[in-house]
Image 1 (cartoon, rainbow, N blue to C red):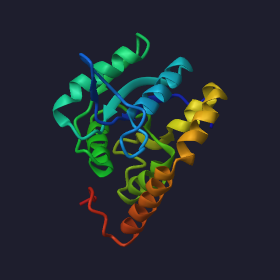
Image 2 (image 1 turned 120 degrees about the horizontal axis):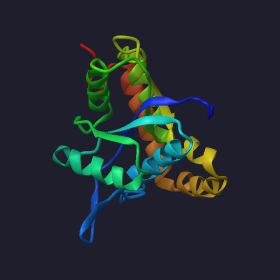
Image 3 (image 1 turned 30 degrees about the horizontal axis):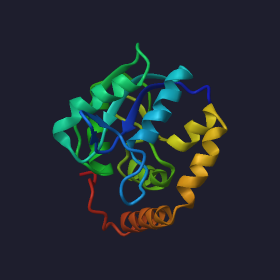
Length: 196
């Protein structure tokens, strides 16, 4: 991973928040073992520490009515001085991309990243390229960014944790599910957002 790339905006793919006592938190995994928003927030914090991002924009998650709360939670978790914006989107990758495209069409040109997990990258990249969103109107670029790779740029101690995550039996099922999603995209059977 090239640590010299600085992103104007990082779209932080976050998941549903869970209530823990009197506050909401992002969890590391869901009940099935899918990696959730906590890992991606940690990766965003590393990008900030490395001075590689200007603005964090939260996108995704199944609960649309809590988007401002999600942005506030992310803002509390990261260092001061970094702008955090909440972006409303449908709770799927296609809906996230549509919201990002709409947002970027009104912003200045820049290099933008969609921060997500390793297993999600192939399907995300296919959707980006299929929908012609790698270069947005006005010249802004959107690229996938792997949270696990960002974690490894910070410390080798993340390697053991990543090995643990990806040795879980559910993760194999998750990766197979992502491959099926790619197959559905190829067959034009994918049920998420399609460019019109």
